[in-house]
Image (tube, rainbow, N blue to C red; front, side, top):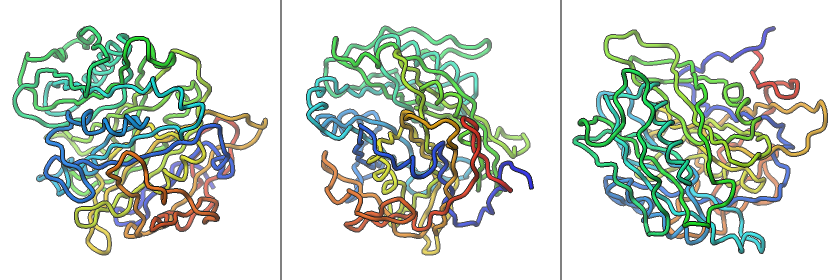
Amino acid sequence: MGCGLRKLEDPEDSSPGKIYSTLKRPQVETKTDTVYEYVLVDFSLEGSRPTVQYVSSLSELPQALQPYYTQGYVLAALHPIILSVGRTRSLPFSLLYRAILARPRPSKQTASMCHSVPVLRVEEWPLPGDSLTSDTVRALIDRVNSSARGGVRFIGSVLQQVSGITNGRVHSPNRGCRSPPHSPPRTPPGERELDDNTYSPDLRLLVFFHCWAPGCAPLDSLACQYHQGALSMRVSRKGQVVSALEADWLELTAAYYRKGWSLVDSFVYWDTPKGEPVPRSLEGLFVYEERSTSPPANDTIVVEQWTVIEGSNVKTDYGPLLHTLAEFGWLLTCVLPTPIIRHDSEGNLATKQVVFLQRPVRNQTAGQPRNQTISVHSDVSSRSVSRVVSSPVPPDDLSPTAGGIGGFPVFGGGFPTSLSHLEEGGFEQEEGKAEVTCM
């Protein structure tokens, strides 16, 4: 018997993937001093629906999300729900995006901190060429660090195709935070600089920042630095289309989490240049945030989860699990969308996403095993859904009910969890080593 990465799933397999964690399940469910509350809001660029808000551009998100900010929520991650990479035509719902907002559950202690709620700002950065390259991404990280030196905090980015020239406009719902002075990125030799109005780009990057009025920023949000980390995956394909993927998420991220850094964004080079062989692996970069203070190391949970769209509404997603983990102090920091697209047994569109959560390491007993894999066995047609709310305050029925299955509570009020069968998997290892699955 050997231990290594498990064999790639059959592309037709209906399993939604696995939950990977540096902790065993009882430790995952340990209460902490911080409890989070989440709101999931879906936006469409092509028209409104009962559970989806319409915006003509993602640049309007600061205004659209302002009611949530007045309640103490802040943007934690933003991602497209559907990626049409490698396909000859765009899929339905290609213009559907999800914003995940989070806040610590209000208490007497947090009530006095409301003045530090930031302002959301988005900038449009034109990019050269028709696809991302590693050199371009490194130049982008340089530019993010240049902005961060002006006192802002990087939240994440969304890549979009455009025609014509964008002018690096800055969008903010109100005044009170100053834009840092513009300084061009340090581009690698041979790469064109990312300055505005110098060429007609095929791509643009919408970059989201938090900024504060002078004197109101939390100390740990000042002078953050951003670093790149390796991201590699094995993939299966049907033609040019990615149909399955495999990655050792804990091995890729462990060294950075041990430093106390946060994973805040990701870039994957999904496209294959024309005329080149179709690769069996894909590369990319994670972006990590280093705070100016010295935070403790982080434990992590990585969830591979299907999102199923029925009609024009999200039917199944990672929301119920996210709300459950929020009770134990787990903070979502990044969602990696993938171009894996299938249809469930009812003909609904299904796509897989990878969700990253973290929590500061608690006191650990010496020699106690930490890494854990939880297998998930559930058809993608299961009817678990997280509610997309239209009001700033989450509905009361998102709280877990007593009891649960396999240690994770189920949801009342019409929110049964998709993780209906959780089994202990993986194996115990020495402290600090990343989890792999025995074959």
